Image (cartoon, rainbow, N blue to C red; front, side):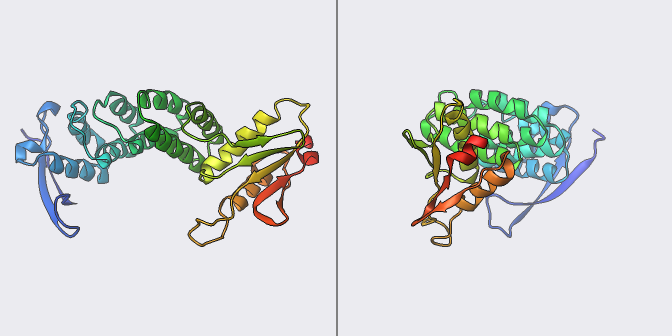
Length: 279
């Protein structure tokens, strides 16, 4: 039809890592006719083509092929939708990526939800993340919601969008997908327990916990934050959360909240009420 012919070298998904497939793709005039099935390829060849277009930043050519997989009940590998969304995002087409995701009728994975959230964040669309998350998590299992919320909080943390990370953590607590950190509360001390949280979740939880506990100006207590001793760290007994939380209290909270490690307990830090009162 007078259209250019495109040739890519891509790794075969059915073969070994060293096996390459040469796929000649003719970009036809009508998007509905564009499919590697014309070449006897099938789904795995389509996946290779989508990745090839992504490497060439050719989202226009990839879009019709991606669209052909939006509907259907048969589950596809998690990485297919992720690669498809990334191909569109790399071309600056976050709107198309978002539309493909919202119209996707096949089974989703938590990783798919995190991928679209990260794409929205990368294009400054943090306000779209929670509405998208709400729709994607409807009627999902607790394990699915937990994995998705953890992933989105982490994506927001890594993209330096703490407000979204905090809002997402609050939603996760209400959905019982992430733990509320206040483990004990009396007239002298409130204790935050960060066990079962990663760095991103712990940072969000501490910010939210401080705001919630001290929303009442008459509250006057010390704060103990249980960070853990690092027993399950890659390097045994090398704390991961404690230095991160102490950095957060000094660098990301104003006025800074000084803390110190509890005597005889390397897995907990104390915020004295005088400093908290000033904050």
